[in-house]
Amino acid sequence: MTQPCPALFLSVATLLAETAGPIIRQHFRSSVAIDDKADASPVTIADRESEAAMRRILTEALPDHGILGEEYGEERTDARYVWVLDPIDGTKSFICGVPVFGTLIALLEDGKPILGIIDQPISRERWIGARGLPTTLNGQPVKTRPCPSLDRAYAFATAPEMFVGPDRAAWDSIAAAVKQPRHGADCYAYALLASGHVDLVVEASLKPYDYSALVPVIEGAGGIITDWQGAPLGLHSQGQVVAAGDPATHAAALQLLRS
Image 1 (tube, rainbow, N blue to C red):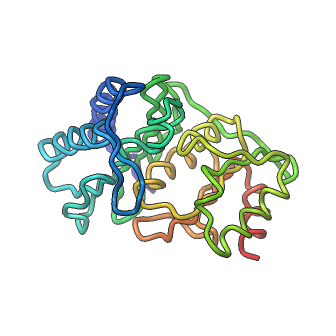
Image 2: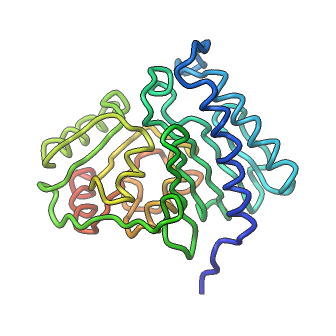
């Protein structure tokens, strides 16, 4: 029998979110400097300060655990437990003053996500998913909604530019098949899926800090999240993600993506 996620880890994850939130709110819609990283993606003081604060907590509370963060890289990622942090998933939205970004906090056990938080610090919405427990939004259980066919699905992807080469054709086939394709929202789209407001999210070119926290949130709400081959997501997945609230929608999306 699979053991529930330990209460200590849940309390630490919650503390991380509560620590990052005020830092991000302080800088939201302010005149923050914007730097470009080596991959041309933007980063701000809010990204750096919030990740640094979370890392300090983890180093003190769980010194034998590993850490992988978007801004400050990896420490002890060969450990049994590894925390994966994205302080602001959706920095472009943050920069533009659009409150659909989120702080992503995940804990992996032997490379598999067992705990995830999607925290929206402006609306103060917090989705928590953990092994053995139902996903909650601000303490109340949430569920995905039924959607038995792809042509009835409302689908999200952050941006068409994330699909390169054959991946773009795959997304175009999904966009043509669903009822309504939408762009934007970053991790917030997965939170909306967990709460039963949208039906499908398809993305590519993601890093472990982009998708790890999403897995427990979606699965704990009754949904399915895999790579494009239908395999479970883990620390070494290739960054192609498909999440659905209904098994039939997920299966139909996989069929299109594989072809």
